[in-house]
Figure 1 (cartoon, rainbow, N blue to C red):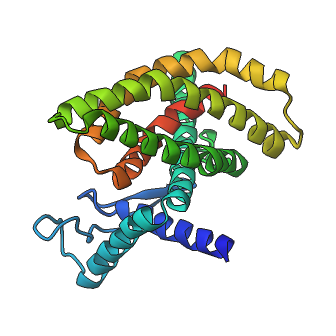
Figure 2 (cartoon, rainbow, N blue to C red; figure 1 turned 30 degrees about the vertical axis):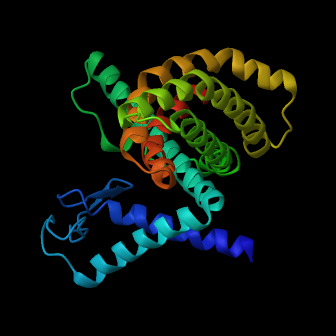
Length: 274
């Protein structure tokens, strides 16, 4: 039953992500094997007073209902909600990273061909973008099994720490955000990234190579990827987390972080998959 519940929640969040493609205010256009599909039109709304095109009341209500259901799940079942949220966002981030790498490779190849005097670059020379599903699975599992439980515990610890510090004092939201961001970046950033390197190495070798990682394999990954990841972390997360701790209630902080994690995991995937 727990497995079925987990799968159901994954499907709901995937649907929410799908709906997100329709909120941009422009006609969506997908490309599959080089063929355009412009049939997706914007009709979802994000509020009662702000929408693009002609909103469909039923679909609008479905979106709001799904969002309310997610918020209730985040309050009633925080751990399992954070697990499937982290897994999906991590997987989406890796897909984004794969697409960026593919796009860059095509661009570099085109530039190289033109540099040697070719005036025509045949379309068939562009490889179609194909998602590496095992690699996405590695990131999904790392997010669901490690980052979700870790961040659930860490955010709760941060909130309790602040409540003890602020008890009986009139401290502003700005001071709370500064305090939490400082602890988050000085303690959690190195710890969570070290743990991720270990979990990623184990899952990557198990799924991609069918072998078990050793301590030596983990140490090699940490040696090659940890410092670049930490440096990138300090350029990305402090501003995100400051806004998160300043304006977002505890039960929804993980969701906001998860949205930012899509971009972060695209960057992280590029580092750890080198």
